[in-house]
Amino acid sequence: MPQKPLPGTIRAIKQYNLKEIFKQSVLFFLSDMRENQELMEHNKLMFEKMDVNRDGKLSKKEIVTKLISHLAGWSGSYAEKLFDKADVDGSGELSYNEFIAYALDEECLNSKKVLKKAF
Image (cartoon, rainbow, N blue to C red; front, top):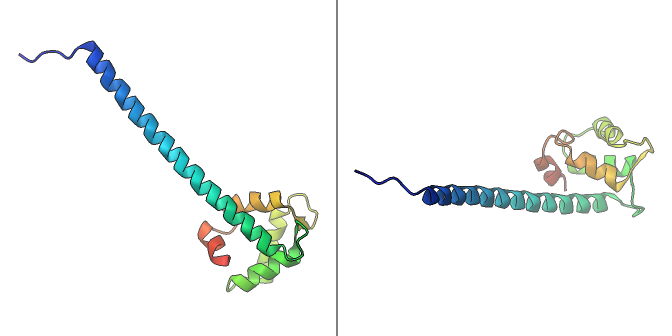
């Protein structure tokens, strides 16, 4: 007749399982943070490349010119629509925060691949 496991053994096994689940969750979180950090660094470099006059803002002309020259098949009117959508405060220029907020929006340029291809 098999012996019943001791209650302490069952508790230890459950705790071990919880620790492993927690450990995996932390590793996934850290991995995601790393990807986000790399994406933020990439977006900062894109902003700096597009800011031709180095005033810390992106004009409609800077963005439209860069998008048309780097993305085959993009029209000026489509690039202008993207700009207008990103220009939340209606100033006619994109601040770094507006640019980042729009760049992180999954719908803005269809995917991260398009952003990477563009620059």
